[in-house]
Image (cartoon, rainbow, N blue to C red; front, side, top):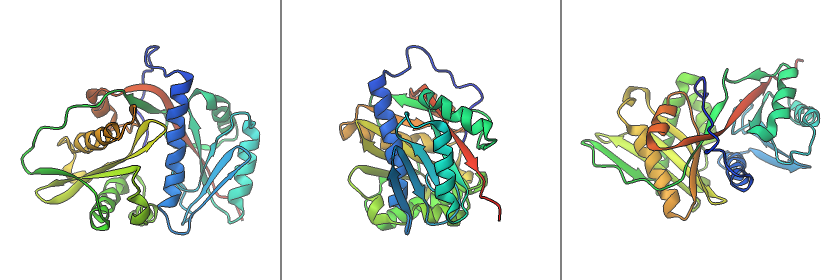
Length: 280
């Protein structure tokens, strides 16, 4: 879930303020969607902050998390209000730091000794054009999920893919629990099958002219076969076909070289900080 040691942001890659606002709005919308897909989760937007209280107490970027929507809210107030919100039932939470506009928030989280979820920032990457569709590959089929049965395959892929990095399968299941919400028309899920077995998946969230690519996942025993690239390509192209101007994603260590090869470029970074649950 973290980026490589030195994501490079070139001067030609840095988005203009309007472009960054669209990328950021799509990322914010991903937190809202993450709550909609859970059962019993709660989304609270209040005075420039967005709180996502999950269906369980497990803290991760899409659940038990906080984002600052109004950069005029002082960083100290963000931390204080987040602690108060999640302390009501003794929860840990994650704090999103999104690009240079959140530099003060990162400094405040560091000063407060919140735990960095990775040693280096995660590259925030953009692709500015539709790519050619993937050539056929023996034994591999990529399909767009149209029903709850196909989404169940997606969930199983995600559970197997993320368990090795600390996201328990039960928690993944709680994050992807409402197929009726996950099949909304602005969302596209792809699943890759290897000899009929679901082994990779990805989704795209279309909003603000941005095809936001999330949940890129490959089961451990099917990695290094180009399957993550195929599902990322499928959902990214689906976003362009739906009229989006760019595709965007936050790259993991494993995914970063794949996305560079595809033509994605780093335009900013994101980071998560963890606030532990209050004692007592």
